[in-house]
Image 1: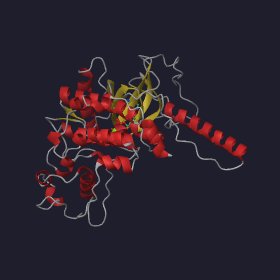
Image 2: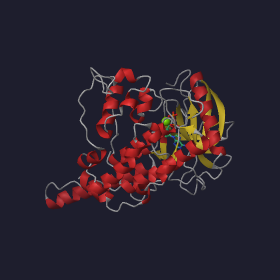
Image 3: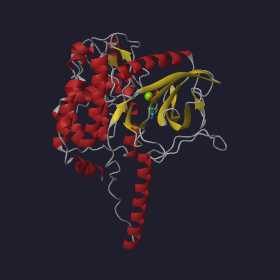
Image 4: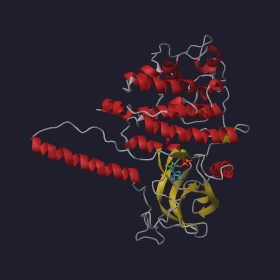
Length: 413
Ligand code: ADP
Ligand code: MG
């Protein structure tokens, strides 16, 4: 992809914006861009530098993203609304063309990495609640105050606040900026994050512990309980990636959202609005609590991925009301006139609450409370879903779960 129209290849200590920003290491990448940790020589702070691919369609989407990010920054002077902040922007000319660059506040790992670090087990409901509160705060701001729909909410697009405080002197915080080209001029692969480092150390210690116990007991011992590697990590986060965002009053695309987080109205093409983001939010909350995607449809012989997706939704949420099932531009592809799926006839119904208990081993109380929080957001009727503002008032978010971690741990052993 590092070719004409594609990504801009960056090497450590490359400079941008007439020398102001110096590339340090790669932080991540997406479909449209690579994101680098850069040092801002003007403010002496670390920043995230998002460098867009150069082809015209990417340039256009970067311009839209900049427009949205500017609106976000203008309306949030105190930078407290849980949405990433745009600091600067410019065009950079490289061998593959002209790339739009966005300078963003430097954030930490994304929430998918967090799920991975936790070995795809649920995070513990108190942590889930913390993340949910931040995401809802961000969505409430976007939806109610700015009229913006994110349209691509997923764990990769929710970033934890950086564990290195970017407002501090980077030298004092333990990171010395690289300002000169290192020998060999490396491309600078993705470096280990603070959480990853912590996990590696704990894993090492656990292995050492087992081998010493094995030696002393002369045989096999039970594996240790899953580590509580995420203990003590502040779960505040922000929403990023506005590359596909739109105004409710000015939509660009009919097909939005990443497959697993896609709402039924988008699949059926019956028109979408802010509540499509709410659907994705509920799917994310489920994934954080269980470590598994809520809906992971697969196409197979005889039915499409879309039809499988609709079937999976109905299996946990109940049958889609006929009016909604047949009301979309694409309804005829999937539903007959009675509102039954054409090609998937037998559904295995199991309520969300049961699923949380039986498959994910949540306690009855935890499962009931989580299902009570999520089910209204997963209403097939988009306008019946609660808004982000209403969700923030929900008692589930405002009560502590003292037993949740131990019940999840029990389940994981
Ligand atoms: P794309 O539009 O190409 O998907 P994103 O904005 O989602 O780009 O960024 C891609 C990845 O880069 C993210 O998933 C994240 O890991 C990392 N990233 C993005 N923005 C930042 C930031 N401000 N600070 C740190 N990492 C970031
Ligand atoms: Mg992304």
